[in-house]
Amino acid sequence: MSKKNVVHVVGTGTIGEPLIGLLTEFQKELGIDEVTFHKNSVNERPKVKALLKRGAKLVVDADKVEGFRAWGIEPAMLHDQALEEATVVIDCSPKGLDMKEKLYSKYEHNTKGFIAQGSEFGFGTMYARGINDEVLKKSGQYVQVVSCNTHNLSCIIDTLALGDGEDNLLEGSFVCMRRANDISQVKDFSPAPQVGSHKDGKFGTHHARDAYHLFQTKGIELNLFSSAVKLPTQYMHSLWFDLRLKRPTTLEALKKRIKANDRIAVTEKKDANTVFSFGRDQGHFGRILNQTVIPLSTLTMPSEHRLVGFCFTPQDGNSLLSSVAAALRFLHPEDFEQRLQVLKPYFFDEV
Image (cartoon, rainbow, N blue to C red; front, side):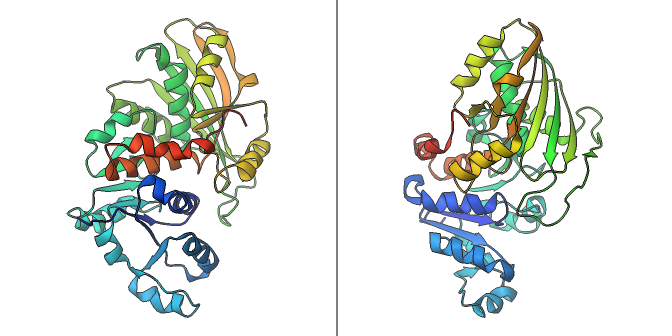
């Protein structure tokens, strides 16, 4: 096992890049000795140079070394060497499950933990910060940080339904209104609303399925169903929710619970672009790290047993906290909670 605490990040996309930036900026406070990242696209050299300037170290495959050198960028090491030296690997690519079988399994002897992102169902123990933190103690080497919308609806469930008992949610229904693509992406934009299929007969889409399995790690069985539609916007995901509750409550009581949760931001804004703009201007790497942003004016209770409302999903921001928390649990199990507090200034009470 390496004497240094080395975090290796695979991928520099909408999650990977801000994650590398966050890890390097707070390297000392988080107790990380070195941050490395894997990149093969030479045409992304401005991004690579910016990350190198922050203190991260570039890792490439052998056949890409000369391509980077031609542009004056010297890779620190090859990918197999980086994996050999890594204490924790965080995969932010869309191929985490493949990488687990083909590559990561070869380095289990020297790596404390492997972490993948939301779409990699089956990679490892499902995790979301604040929902099932206790599972990290028995997660094994592989952890799957759930998707952005799963973070959101799980936070809604945990705060607004299960706060009155683990059996309080009779039924939860959700509609995930997804952005077409990220503003940094040039492919797959939808020029018109595109409805999603209900590929899972029981849960509808993977959002409810993943939330179900997330809460199962705590021994909680939930009745959940989700649908999804892709909208022609590049700003943010939005979520509509309908919670049927076993015990009666009031809107004021639920609003107090929302304001008491530091992973939830509230807002008077009703437009995704204005919420997105706040994150761009005030967030870390332009990201809102809260798990959800709730416009309080959209909340309503048709009865004392039913809550309906909208919220916004900080899509490539809300999984960053969970990714860092999981990494620190592998690196510093004795005080990872205290180390995480360095990120507190980037969580907003109000947007």
